Amino acid sequence: MQSKPGASKQKIAPVPSAEARRTLEEQMAAFLKAGGEVQQIPRGVSGQVYGSSRQITIGKK
Image (cartoon, rainbow, N blue to C red; front, side):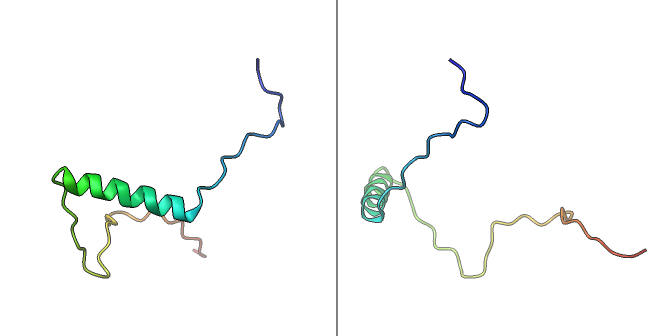
């Protein structure tokens, strides 16, 4: 059965923050137990890869 144009999509209910926190803690514990390692990244360091700008510049010529 196809949905009608304009039919609203079902929205996923947000996870309560206490549940999300508990799930994250469980996942982190499993990761560390399996030998995973957490790296501390210095403040101000970014994963941004700098290359050519993708930003559009509008100006007078």
